[in-house]
Length: 394
Image 1 (tube, rainbow, N blue to C red):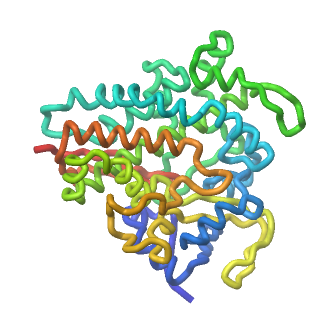
Image 2 (cartoon, rainbow, N blue to C red; image 1 turned 90 degrees about the horizontal axis):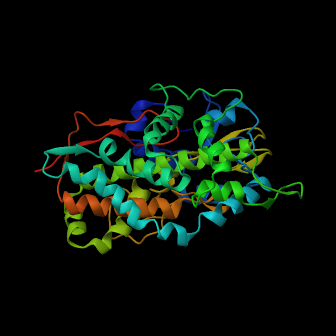
Image 3 (tube, helix red, strand yellow; image 1 turned 180 degrees about the vertical axis):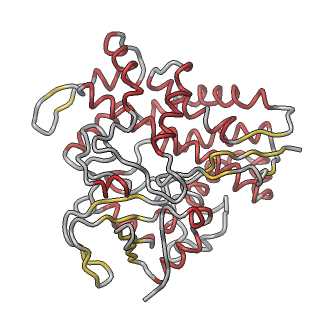
């Protein structure tokens, strides 16, 4: 019996979880934590298989351990916390308006948002990857998509951040009727109902679909509120973390950063490797409605399972030399965006934003060093990344 210990709320483990992840893969591929009553799998094959099995590992109780353990009814419209048939209907609706063509047309605006953040910093001795770029550009993109005035975007981003924050070492607090901060969007939705535009929110409000009861209708106000909140939160928080990790990891690998400065065609693959190497969401939860046999053990119905994405992405059973960051690695060897029916709908947008942000940073700042004394990881149990990442430039 292995004595390996994994606690998703442990600040010390979170600072560098990879040694623990390796021990889990090697010694306890099916792990049970008694204190918080959850199981976890860490090998690539198990995580991939689990994501693909949406019947035995369901999302309808939430994809976050605290939500699953709270045993509450998820309100309609949460999308990522839904199961078929509702999930299928709501996902199809979003995919109709979140098309690859629409995403591709965003590039000039995303570059403009990056330039607005970065140009004033040129000539200074340093900047913060989070405060000066990561916290600004993704929220501006979401604001543009949903028609949220820029004057209100900071307040919404701060509210979304606050909803995910935890005290160091403690689980996130969950209410009996979670709104996920959707009240922040109420004003805009009510305005858009009467003043439709060409933004994503107007399309979602106007789109007709057939619901699980066979009724053709539009989203209710409450569904639209939750829908908007979940998509905006997921799109903002994770992309902010990707940008932060780009700053940290490339500072740790200046030789590879120099290659990127010299050859921008390597940037898309570098973003893919960053997503594998430091995934913004290192663990994803699922609820188990029936008994499951794994590793000669019977896991009882009603259990919570964590799929350790951060561990799977560094599984030497699937990936050669997985603890080495390598921008030339063949892309696609990760489960950062999930797998199966819940594969992240915003993956193309996150990749696009990451690619443009890195390209625009390298154009202005080919070198930087992290000010380690002032850099700080964000305390959340859902995403892992930098709250502040100040850097100095020569």
